[in-house]
Image (cartoon, rainbow, N blue to C red; front, side):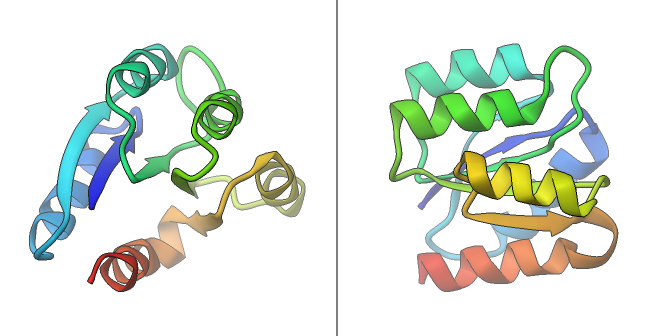
Length: 119
């Protein structure tokens, strides 16, 4: 399974890469630190799954989510955010997110979910 990581925090990207790297069958396709990088990378290489932050310096991850689902509806999109408010959760799910997790309390669920989807 090819997984992309989109987050403006290098710490989060590195931690996800490290945790996912321990799972046989998962490879990191690419990483991006903002929406522009994510969109450019996605148009070159469409991974099986994208872990996507909402708040980024240049544009909302929700806009990236909409583009991903428009161009590749089968791509699994996991929103991972520090803003787990109900209206944002609802908006992401209505835009096509497959999952929505809180970075602070549900980080491990992302790893377990991808482990189950992959293997």
